[in-house]
Length: 93
Image (cartoon, rainbow, N blue to C red; front, side, top):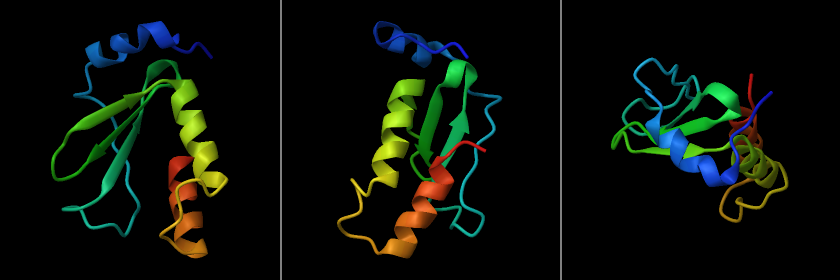
């Protein structure tokens, strides 16, 4: 699988996301949830359903984020069950 080099991250922002398949947790509130779309070359897009602001991640950045979730790096304010649910949603299908 080809990935973007860090110096080409700006190329992610030229992608047309109009056909992106956005996914979210099945029981999440459509008015207040995070949505993920897997893009070409291993890139990933993340947006909030309310603002629709999109953050784009290279394959390496997304892998680092998922590993951080799995290692508990971001869960100082959540319990173990919520941590597992977040990590399960972050991993590619």
